[in-house]
Length: 130
Image 1 (cartoon, rainbow, N blue to C red):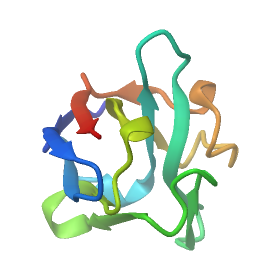
Image 2 (cartoon, rainbow, N blue to C red):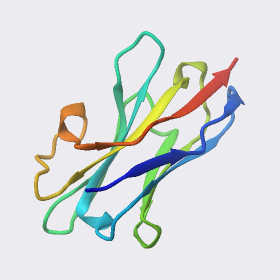
Image 3 (cartoon, rainbow, N blue to C red):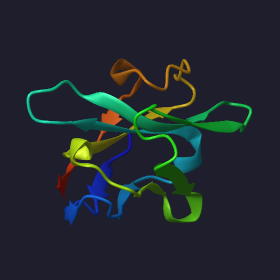
């Protein structure tokens, strides 16, 4: 069982930057695949970024095409925290951002799929004004 709490959402102007954090409970943070998703008003939840981990301790980071080159996803295992550094923000980045997790013992590698993740945070609002 893991609990996820996002923070860092705010209102910023286009071109600005934000860093979102996702604090995870538990002592086995490094044994979870982690992802960021977002949901804009009237739209479906969509994949943003993920750190895909395997039972062999390797990991890879993936990004949606819409954020590639602007967003950076990282973890601090000592702090049990997942980050999303967002630069060059655009109005279309406006959404509620959610972090998600799944134990790597059950993870199939479909990092972009909502159904892949068992645990979700409550979300944090990011609003980008033009």
